[in-house]
Length: 397
View 1 (tube, rainbow, N blue to C red):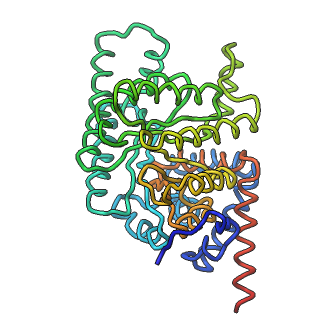
View 2 (view 1 turned 90 degrees about the horizontal axis):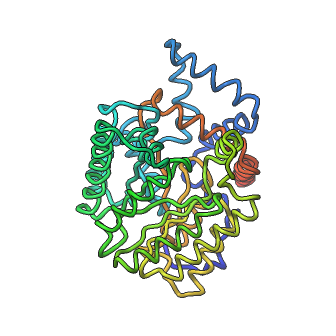
View 3 (view 1 turned 120 degrees about the horizontal axis):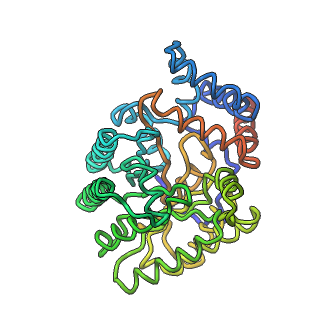
């Protein structure tokens, strides 16, 4: 029985709770996987080799499926994720089903992705362990089209029709979520298409968030302008009388953003340092709590301090741990010490669960491995916690 506990009792170093659903075999697999991810050289060499092997049909999918895929993905289909969803649910952690096929560019593939997201919405109607659905705008429309709109270039007649189809797919997903009463997250992307995505997100929120936050836009606080965007969007929501859905993250494209800014000669949108990003992140979650009756907050973070700040502030303000407008979120396969300890204290917490065919989700998996390599201390923290739990189990045998 999960009970309401003070955030003072939260212990993100409690590995017994963090790895309760992991067998010794699961822990050993995770240990060796993170050891490999810690080697940036291995990731740089392994990524093109794996891509090449998959392209020419070498039989390595089984190896991938039982290692990196098993750690970071739920399954190849929605039904294939059922066990992983149930396992998270045992620890009072819900699931965000994320169809993670990337890099498609045809209208047929955009329709297929839209239909797959709609299938996840239908599944969420029948399984209360699915707390959110999610889609990536470039999964339902062409990246270069969004870039052209962002650059305020005139569209051709064909491009206008193409954009109308993109909007129609977004609207179809958001309406299905509204009808099912299942919130939906619109993922953030690169800065040079983000203004277009923000416009779409505001349009969908204004349409479907009249009574409650159903549609959530994503604010990447490693950008120095996104705290101001969050505040401006809430001011607009108040004037237009709708609820703001805000998924607050630090961000995932820092190196690409800086390289592009340097190459094209414009000011980088990225914060000058990590401290500035952390400051804006924590200010953003406090700002959302200040307006909790109007804002749905999802704090997507692997940062212990940010999780503790949010948990502590909720207690200070007497906001129930399971308040429907506040969620914590982490990625599947990472930061189980945060997710399961928050779940044990009855906070709303969800895991992003990528799924899809092994070959099709490899771009996502490679990016995740590269982010782990470059994220300061992330892999080291994962290894330290796994080692601590392995030692704890040895000592009680």
